[in-house]
Amino acid sequence: MNLFDDALKKLMNDKLDALEKAFAADVMFFFGEIQPSVVRPFRDLIEDLKKPLNPPQSPQTKLVIILNTPGGSAETVEKLVDIIRHHYTDVSFVVPDFAMSAGTIFCMSGDRIYMDYSSSLGPIDPQVFNGKQWVPARGYLDKVEEMFDKSNKGTLTNAEFVMLQNQDLAMLSQYEQAKNLTVTLLKRWLVDYKWKDWTTHQTNPAKIGQPVTQAEKEARAQEIADALGNNKTWHSHSRMIGIDTLRNTIRLKIEDYSSDPKLQPIIRSYNDLITEWIGKINSSIFVHTRLFF
Image (cartoon, rainbow, N blue to C red; front, side):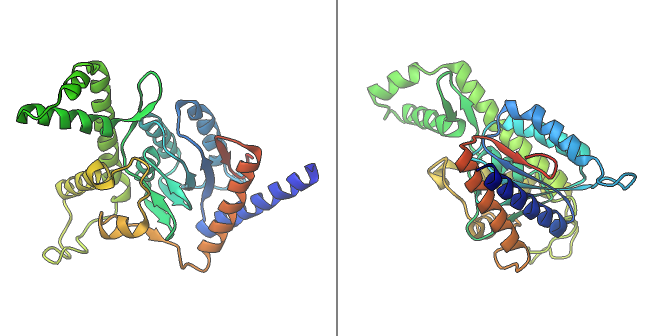
């Protein structure tokens, strides 16, 4: 069995090497929830990865993260982005399967996002721990706002009144802060990273060729934050938002590798193999680089 596992590891390392050559970048694979416990090992792995392969060769300035995550902590995502951007000036995210919630916010910190027709991002409703379980903050706040609206209209039921009375104001404040943080991060990263080279209008017929102002970038980022955070649109925190919706409805630029004869086969074969391996060893969080398995 060890010989079989060793052969699988070598195969996955070979596929990772092919990805690094295809992207001309350092590549990291990340699988699992994004929680505070990953920050220190993530930092150490990035620091090791940043070291040049053949000193005194210059270290790589480009990083590609292949991301599979159900989400997690927005605060943790912010710290991971701080670590990445300390070392790399060009960052891309590849989403072979899905990057939900905080994973979607993470992707917005990249210079570009690669997806294929079967990939998904998710609504950016932040997850907050209420003492018992992780709950979607925006969904909670929307429900409370709905009850306040009913109260103003005089249509609040007695049962809803009791529920409203029992709300923990400190927790509601925490939910509000979590929501505001996700919007703040998404807006900042879109403007600073994903749109750093967006200098002229390209799709607005009335403005094509005209310079894009900082205010216009910030307004556009707010539109995307509002769209991805609108529970009335998505109806579910787990809703999987595909590339067509992201491109055509939200109007977010996504690099589609669905028909790329070079990238699609190597991304798909690597991701499918390594996620099957993760299922085999029953790992909740898994990271792979050329220096770490």
